[in-house]
Length: 103
Length: 177
Image 1 (cartoon, chains in turn blue, yellow):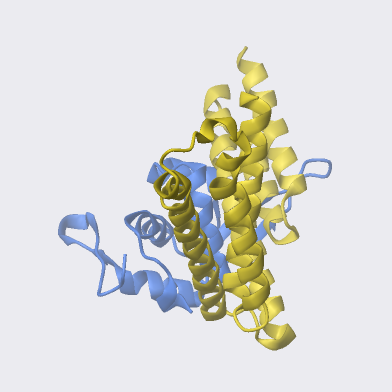
Image 2 (tube, rainbow over the protein chains, first blue to last red):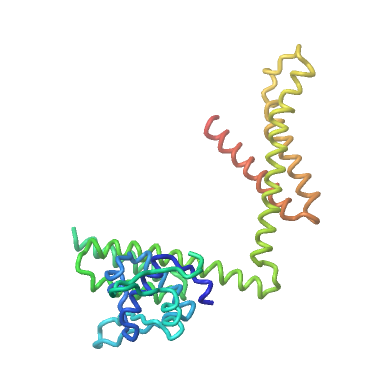
């Protein structure tokens, strides 16, 4: 399933953002700010990742009366997939690379 | 003005979320909830516009894919391959119709003058309708009936062209007198 995912540079950017703190849940707007992707680009990527079970989603439980906020985190499969396709360069800088995957 | 932009953003995304397919709605709510955490009103408007486009694309994709799955489960009639086959049949029907119409307009329309050069046909205005409407529509009807049992998609293409031609003529007559 994951192999059919279209790995655009934007998808790699999102995967890279998740890899910065793989165990943490992230908000959509925070991912958007970190990656510079607009909602119209970011959410289709999140939807595709979730459809392929690479991303788990959750509703944040907040104080009563306030609507919950959606949270995202890579699944173990998603983590493996992200690590396989996003490579880290030297000196701490992250380098995005496609490894034989159709973009 | 700025708060109006935010209000519009919320209304837009709420409306799109409410009217989208069930599988997409949670994503709409997710984007909608994030608007509360966007500092700038104008950024929130852009967020909503992007979210609207994402929701529409997701809804369309899910609807098409679930429809194809339903049709496939019903008997395998509508797979992607068969859709392509049907589209090819329809296109061939339309191509046949265009060829018939071109032959009729460019060839048959000149036939009376070629056969009877001395005759003045301007006194017979109805004659002009024969090659552009009557003859093609008759050929379309006959061809569609003949092809219906064996090449239904081509017949549908021909019928579609016939309807398009008729609508075009009606619009032309009503607008140009």
